[in-house]
Length: 220
Image 1: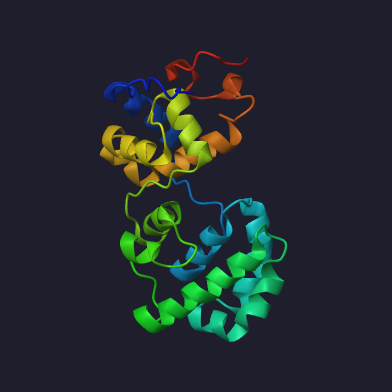
Image 2: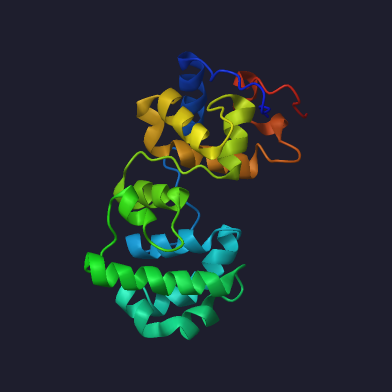
């Protein structure tokens, strides 16, 4: 991974096209692994996913969303009800408070609808830039890049999008990945990081972009 002293340049255009063409051929329509039914439940699911696995969040939200899939229904359920549904998730007490608070704001300020603006989304309790970008991409079709630890790792290892921090990697994706791949770029990268380019031991032997990747410490 790039160190703090020197960030190498991103891969050239031709290499970016080759890499994303392979990722697209292998998975033409990648999607988030979080379960949701509408923009509101997506906001809640992504907010709950901080420091938690998608699998764990999906287990908790299955019952929650069955009874509260709108901001008003969530408010009607109340803090205790939300807390009970999500207590298996890390930091569940604070997250329950955030869900109630953001639901109240959506009802009072946005007519119960999720706004399709990054700034408006980031004004909601528990919603940061990554969460906002996921919602803009998955709910509204905007080519926004939600950079998490997986994407940060893959972006730097492969030099698809090198950067010192998540904001720099986000900009690098936007600047270097061809526009034709932007809508799905963060999905391909997060799935690649989650299942192939893993943190402790990347699975280079089964990686479909192995020959295009400049990472020096490859495994068999």
